[in-house]
Length: 269
Ligand code: DGL
Image (cartoon, rainbow, N blue to C red):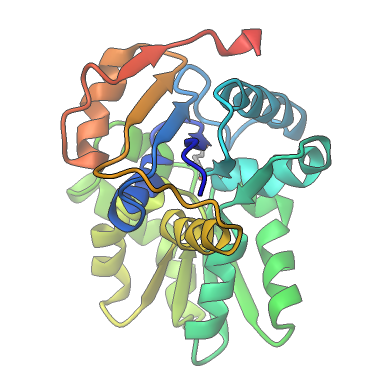
């Protein structure tokens, strides 16, 4: 038993898709969330900058003596975790591996689409993970740089969103993939728009959800689940104004989190 909090970070709001899953499947766990809203997006930045940011995100969460840290950001997981992992003793969980394991299990025609930020797709990390799982799987990758700003600004549906989704997903439709991995934690918010474009038979893998299922297995196997009675406490930290996080957070969490959010100076960590 371990009643310390689960630490979780993202460049902004995307990691809240994982927070929703923790609330569902590990409801009594305490959570410390950091959203680097002052420096979002990570996906269009250099590897060096993302590595620096991710080290600061991890250092900040470690100041709460958390028991594990979930990198609920596809970009951080693809380019920074492989570099920084060796420097930390704490279990750092990537949002990517669990979703590709799931995708390899559900695909029937062994053709998998991968959607991510520019940096995630360019890193080639997702393809590498999948090839290690099953070399026969064919992948079709597409960077979707407009998706994060759409989500951050609340454009999760409507005509503008549909047009952009259509533009990005055309190539996956042509290649006849049967499974698509949403390798960015912002993208599950666009699920409905994506389904409208590719049809309801397409299997969409939500990376934010898969990593939480993996975290549950890990905590259980290591006797680290919390034995708190009742719902866990959730504390949110951001590097820009709390107000906009609270407002946009409603879209992800479908509840009011005012009073639970504080702004910090991440450059100090
Ligand atoms: N949620 C991040 C990811 O999963 C968003 C990317 C960004 O900040 O550009 O990649």
